[in-house]
Length: 247
Ligand SMILES: C[S@@+](CC[C@H](N)C(=O)[O-])C[C@H]1O[C@@H](n2cnc3c(N)ncnc32)[C@H](O)[C@@H]1O
Image (cartoon, rainbow, N blue to C red; front, side, top):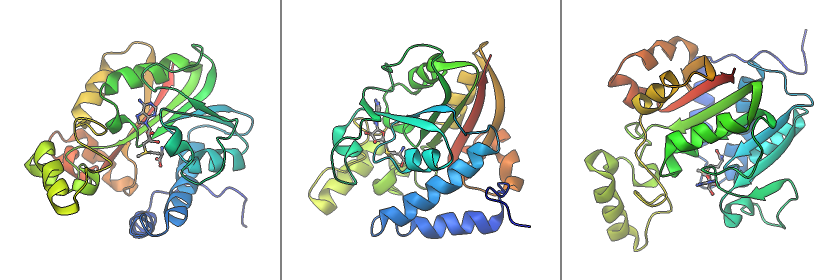
């Protein structure tokens, strides 16, 4: 029997499909981000129903995730600090987009059912502050979905990878030498080194959240224990997903 929303399964086949779609990120962003957004929404729905829920997508950029969230029945608003990113798919700024910073969210406390963010935390200079803001705007009982690329992962330096392993500043200088321009993800300016250890320590210091799940976002479920292994987790996890419930 087929259902409209089959259960989410973090299989090896799913990881292979995601990584192979990633190869088209530059040439066919609609394909990659559309695939990732549908996968992410299916994953999010395994923690909470979405129909009718008020969701804020923090750093939502061009809105692929917001589209997939709306397709799942959610009412979604994007908050992003950059109008260029919000308009990446062309056209006018949608009236569901709000210009504002993740570090000082233009929203009332306890105002949304789900606070969602994909691959933004590594782009802010104060990651715990952003996580704090996400918790603040979420209503008690609501969910925070916070996922980010780990600095020591193979993609930690984004387009300057793998040279970030020799230092972010070195990787940026090397990129400038090779390409004659600064990288979009520029270490110390638009990209920062954030670890799993830092954010896991942050969760432990909070008494207003319950940790629902911590996992490597793109990897098969049987690799989940890796997040408990200091050191190794920073490299292998790739992208850490924190699912939190506000008390
Ligand atoms: C790598 S993109 C991720 C876009 C989208 N969430 C995704 O996963 O495809 C990072 C986004 O974060 C936004 N961003 C960076 N710093 C921000 C801040 N302080 N407040 C809000 N958005 C920010 C950027 O403008 C950009 O749209």
